[in-house]
Image 1 (cartoon, rainbow, N blue to C red):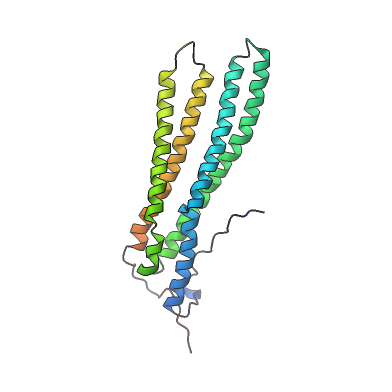
Image 2: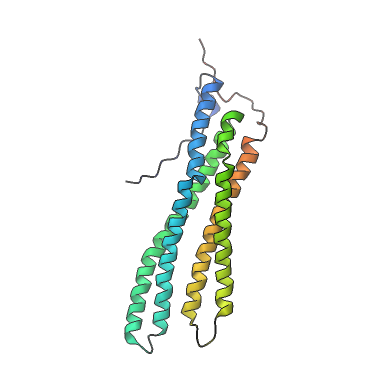
Length: 221
């Protein structure tokens, strides 16, 4: 059974909203937005992303090592066998990591849609201030920049510094693959930080759009 928290539903349609007053609606809105923000850029999400990137890097390290060994198979038969084993082990770590990251990105899209829908219900400056998290966004952005810059450097420096006859194609692929994983991880993190900041500016701090019906249905006595 997965321990991942389930996503809240979108706001109910106007016709069936049953909040007794605006304060009740704002309280529910703040509770759900707080949970969604934590699911999107909470510190735990950063740790999960880095963990999956580490799993992918470990898998590619095994794959790259296997490629190097396979290239040496002509001179050493046992290196070829070990290389194929490394390739299988690496694929066993790399493929699940790629799938998990894909699921992570798909879930992020759902979370962002819910953030927009719940945020658009109304404006609550006091409670919304707690959702901006500028420090957390900055941490995401800085770590993402370091990862992306380091990965890009590996992708460029690795092939450029390879010496024909000394460095094998497998070694170059190993370095470039690790750099690509770091770059993609940094890119994902930077996009998350940027989309959160854009949501704050476009939804939380922007004036509420005029609506034809109130976000809550007053109770009738």
